[in-house]
Image (cartoon, rainbow, N blue to C red):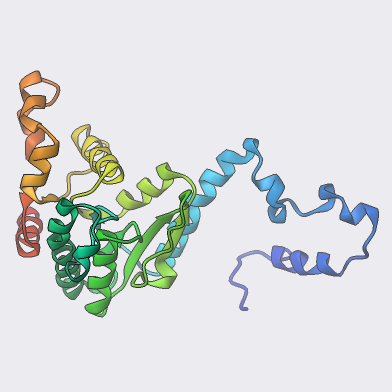
Length: 266
């Protein structure tokens, strides 16, 4: 492997290989002797949390920089929404009806990827099933790449098969994962979903509302769904949000409508 470093010091990988050849003694078997950066027990200590947070921020950042990812179009949405062909497997009738948004997410990702140069407006999802799968799938079918930001959950969740492998990341910290969703976002689209989708939606809206993030096109697919689960006017009537806050997002039903909103923002 070619060494691109800008200094002449010994490479850490050399020492990682060298220690495999050292004599087996009580001293070398001691955890104290293990190189700090290869010692999993040490790296997982509570005191090392700041280091782990930094590593989770840095690894995807560096790899996306190296892959030339400049900007992303984010898709949030429910993991339980099936594709239309499998809507009979849905847990509820409502989920079966929401399967139409799987197809809209797939179509939206396909159309946006066709407009992308491979570095700008790259589809970015949570990398899982449901709407996330639809986004990755649409990008792949259009011949493009997609970013998948998975997270380790108590129940097994493998990345969907359509995410670009070299852009498929795994996280321990929800906070760092959410930062990566938004750090390159040039547009945010949200499809019907549950707690996770709501969390991501309001996190992003709050950052935009408070000026902690530049305003980007923000699209909610499925107006009936969103108006049923959130009483936006009640928030306005209570004075907890302002009239301008309701202009931070747009309701749409189709991929084409979402793209029109994004284009109008430019």
